[in-house]
Image (cartoon, rainbow, N blue to C red):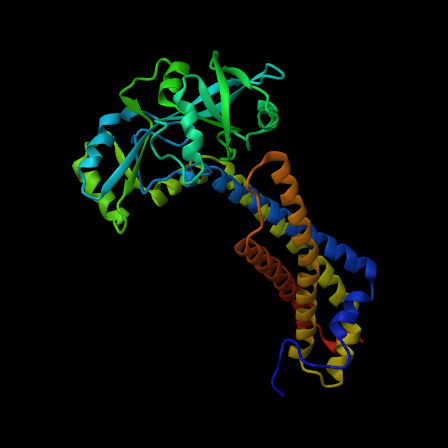
Length: 390
C-alpha cells in the first residue's frame, strides 16, 4: 500500500494520543499560540513601520520626484535649488511640477499648551499635491496667509483639533511661535518619523520658518503625460540635470524611505529578531511535548512494530500530531493577532494590519516549527528496539 501522511483509518491514533492528556495538549497549544502571536506582532510592527514611513509619500500626485542627494530620509531632508525643478519642464514628457518645502516645526496644543514636533508641508495652493480629488478645493483656503490644513489622523497629543473644527469652533494655535488658524482637515496619517502633519502654502511656510530660502525646496513633484515611461524619463532627466539633485520614480522614492528604516536603523532588525525568538520558543515547546509523548508511548509503539506495522507508518502518526498541533495552535494565534492589530491601530494610528502574505508566512513557520520538532522527536522512535523495551 502506498504510504500517505494522512491515511484514512477508523482509529484516529494521532488525535487520541494528543487528547489523552488534555493538560499537556493545552500547554502545547498555549506555547504554539504564544509563539504565533509573537511572530505576528513582531512582523506586523516591522511591516507597519515600513508602511507608515511612506504614508505621505504614497499620497503625492507625482510620477517622478526630485530631491537632494544629501537627503537621508523624511526626517532628514536637505534642500536643493528650485530652478532644477523648473528646468525639468524642458522635457517633452513633463506636464506639471509642484515644489514642496518639508520640515518639522513645533506645534502648540491649544488645549494643554504643550508643544510637539509636527511635519509641515509647504506648497503653492494652485499646484497639485495629493491624489485626493477634494484636496484641491481645500487648498484654496491656504491662499490666505497664516492658514493651515491639519491632518485629522494625527496623534491626540496635538489636541482635539478635528473635533473642534467639525463643531464649528475657530481653531487657532501657534506653530514655531507664529499664530496660525486651521482652515480645514486632511487625511494623511502619522508615521514613525512624524506623529502628525499639516499642510500650508509656501508663503506661510516661510513665515513659520524664516530661514527658508525662497529659491530652495526639499522635494519636487513631477507629473508626466499619459503613456510616458517614468523610468525612461527619470534616466533622461538624471543625465540632463546637475548632480546637486537626484531624480527618482514614484516607486523608487517610496523604496528610498523604506530602505532607510530597513538598513540604516536597528528597528527592522529588532523586530525580525523578535519574530525569530518566537519561532525558537515555539520549537522548544513543541519538541518537548512530542518527545515526551513518544517516550511515554514507546511500549505501545514497540507492540505495533512487533505486530508488523512498518516504521514509516508509526512515524506518520507523529507527523500527523505535528500537523494537528500546527493547525490548532495557529487559529487562536491568528484571531488574537487580529484583535491586537486593531488595538494598535486605534491606539497609535499606525497602519498595522493583517495581510495574506504575513498570515501565510506565519502559518508556514508554525507548520515548519511543528513538523521540524516532530521529526526530531521521531529519532526516539527510530532508535527504539522492541526487544530492549520489553
